Image 1: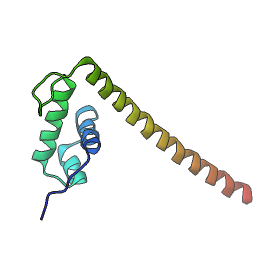
Image 2 (image 1 turned 30 degrees about the vertical axis):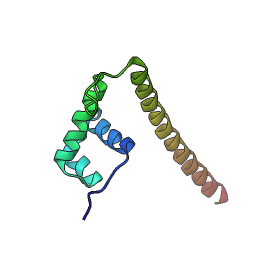
Image 3 (image 1 turned 90 degrees about the vertical axis):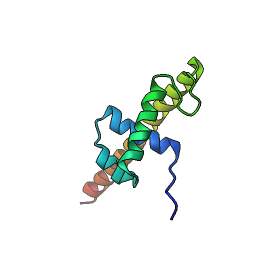
Image 4 (image 1 turned 30 degrees about the horizontal axis):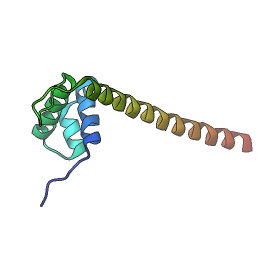
Length: 102
């Protein structure tokens, strides 16, 4: 049976939860369906990238690469916030319609 593969964006999101929001390794690994060791490797890789190093290349990222990475992270955050707002407005609208019909 083959190992599940995950998109780099998902790996970064889970690493972000573990690093910046103190999400437990065990819960993160269970949520992704990977071993704790694999998740820790991903977190280490993410931390190295934040320091400006890429493990795969062993080189320091350029300022442009760092800026791109920062902007991509900001974009993901804004998209998550937008999705939350969409869901909230939908919920409020349905609640409003239910109360106005009564």
